[in-house]
Length: 121
Image (cartoon, rainbow, N blue to C red; front, side):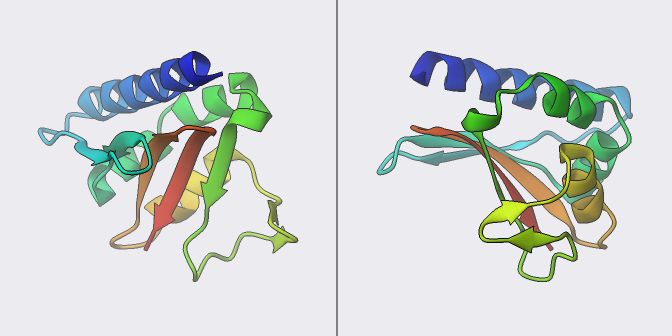
């Protein structure tokens, strides 16, 4: 499971970076490392998040990523429907919502149990 998780976050982060580069952004995703909990990933800027939201990567993640390997942490002001820790939205909606806010961004983090997509706005 750990190898699959690392491959999944690497693929998602790589596709995210490729999407940002294709959109013409000169910036790069900011690496994240939390060794105490074994977490690594990337934080995207608002511009990078917007570029990602406008590309095909969120739909590819929605279609091909194993559900049991993905978790989402919504921003406190998220308008997406949530009940009993279940989010009733797909990955494109989650990323588009973050991108629609002026300082909205996402982070993609590999943790020992899978991949966490974190909204921030």
